[in-house]
Amino acid sequence: MNLEVLANLKANIEELNIAEREASFVELELFQRSSKELLKQKVESMKSFLMEQTAFYKQDANQYSDKINMAVKTYRESIEKIIKTYEKFYVDTFEIRQSARDNQKTCLANICIIEKKKQNCRTKKTVEKYLNMQNYYAQKKLNYTVLINECTARILWCITHMEEDVLSVYNGSTMAIAIPKKKSNLINRIRMFFYGKSYYKQFLDKLFTETLPKIVTDAQYKINLIAATEKGFLKQVKAMNRQIQNSEPKKAA
Image 1 (cartoon, rainbow, N blue to C red):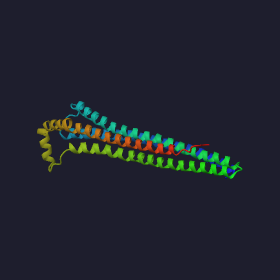
Image 2: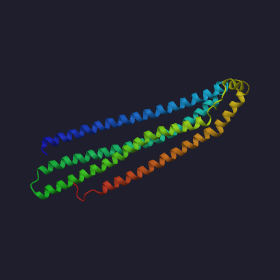
Image 3: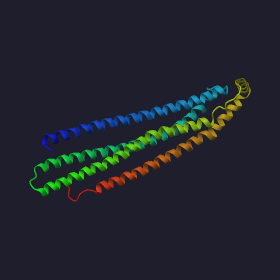
Image 4: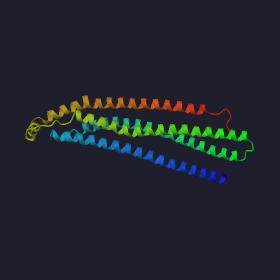
């Protein structure tokens, strides 16, 4: 490897490092923006759902606005906790991946530095010494690639499962209190005219005594699973980093 090729390689490494960082932070920003949009959509959907229920039972939404807002607030807080837990997992994993990428670039830089030193060697023993060091950093770079791939897999897991969990909580809660289908719209209108207020109170009772508590419980269950998954992943990362560091040669250049 001549000096010109070496210089070009170092320049390419620096450019690649900048490009990867920029792409990664764009990816992070998109995830955070998508998280906010998902929360906003589901909260608006829940509010619309409750307003539709109120209209179905022929009741005045203004009269029950406090209860509707309270229900939406409880739902929002539960969904927001799920999203924030996923965001923490994502950001923690993102930072680990960035660190691994930085370490990988250091390995490449060290290989370049050693190559320059190797070109000035005069003895076969010294050349072999530098070759061994280059092989060491090449293997270390490969180990960081494995770690980076693990991080990327977890990031994709966060993206996919966050939306699935939020939709699961939303669909489960709305299906539990959805308006039952009736055979005759005329019968429905007559029934709501005479008994709408009574039915709506039953609906609200079920909402606050069964549905909302279940939303809170289900959300917490999912949060605990996410936290446990992250804890296991961080333990795995710690073990991988320990293995990489323990492979350090006794004498480093």
